[in-house]
Length: 500
Image 1 (cartoon, rainbow, N blue to C red):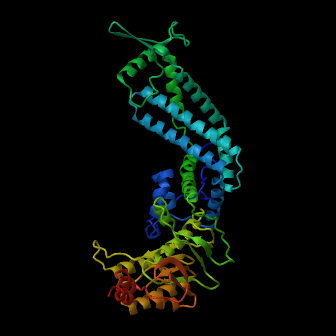
Image 2 (cartoon, rainbow, N blue to C red; image 1 turned 135 degrees about the vertical axis):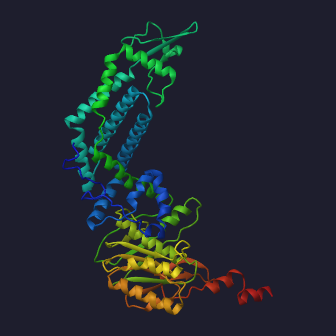
């Protein structure tokens, strides 16, 4: 299959075969703590897989395409087949590194033969496994046609036949090394005959000077020279086959191998977290239903706490008819920012076409995801914190960014409350006018009533005034930072009275 064929632009990530353009890293990667999740994903997929997690697919069609592929990847048989393929390709890459490191031209040729044989074997096995799998997604169904067409083509069959045949001959090479009276004699037995001796039992047989590593020892080099002299036609055949199939790799398969790790890495993380009791759901994308979720939690926090056994509190939410923004207030350290991050993560993973960290959820399609979290003053620029926040906010409020999901956390904290209320209200009104939805965490309870499409949520406390990390609808509340500090250090009236 040539690069210019009908399948040349195929991508398992995008139905149109689009590739990610080099863009500036979106702010939501850091703001939503996605890098913590990425560290876990890279364990399975490698660091290179993270490039596919940095940008959202451009269209609703691409999101649905990915979701269908992921539904197939989660099936045990399909996941096992694809994982086996990536492991086989890992062996191919290892052989390539050995070939690249090798100094002897003949040894390079042999490593190339091994490499091509491993590549062909991985492709043939994947084709066989996918033929037996129940696939429903357009992406993997189309890829199965691609791998079938490729492995059944005359060019592939000829390449595999020649490479596999020459490799079998290489594996059949035998040398007998005899050490006697301070002399070493190297013999090449003919047709597998070894002069009546049994050198395997005696430890006198070297099976292959190419089998150990990329660097030949002096003994192996000498053995190789003996082989070249005794079998010149055979070694010419190795060089001929290696030269003929040096450009063996298919660009469609190369792209598929890289992109499929996107799904496999997330599937591995999801299975590990599910074993620990964390829920994942296939999100519905129903525009006629409100955006809502049950058992929503912060996956980044869960990844950190899963090993320590610390609990992760889940929340339910629902944007009722006409509601566009949650304004979340309440006590400090009460779970407000974690809730906002979990909402952002919900939209992110839904837009990625993956399962979401929740028991169930309905997430309509959003054009983009935008976040703005409080920043520190920049020493490099010399700008104050407020100016830094405004510099980040300006591009978010561009007119063309309609229909996005916006996560804002503690904006304008260094401004006077009066000014912060005015600016915060203008920000909310702007995004609502662009038909955006989102969540705004703030210490200013007045923002909960600046617009009829804004609804108030608050961090819930128990009867002792301690944080429950539950976020519920309710009247906007102060942050209570002073009250929290008084209680923390035992300075309430009741605490002082008991001590005195």
